[in-house]
Length: 174
Ligand SMILES: [Zn+2]
Image: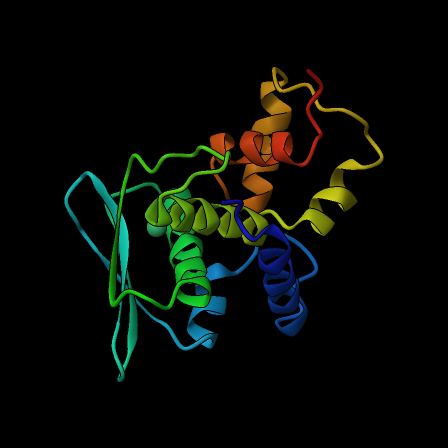
């Protein structure tokens, strides 16, 4: 079963539009709050990155505050993705070693994780902003550490997340 890339792209575009986001870094915490989510930063077990809990009264994102800030931003975006895409569970707990496979899978939970990660990458590194930054430079040299580090800082994401995203968008030559 493939993930719903078009749907996710449309949802992210409407959020970027609604909150008038025209340059990085994307204010993910503020977007999540405006979407009605509460965010709790707290130390969690080291193998957990976060969770989302919801019932009729409230929806709460828990973020492991012991992790790096860029990781916490990714967690908020990932949980917001679950909130907007996956309404079936009251509690979803995310472990650190979330598989980043992008291929298709038949397991419902795997698909949900891949979709939430895809949503997070689309939201934190919007394709339109990346295009504005990179389209005039041509293919990226991923071994240019300064370039990658600076771009990751600009979007307030990890270099690992950035490289995956650039690869997914076809900016890296193979
Ligand atoms: Zn998840």
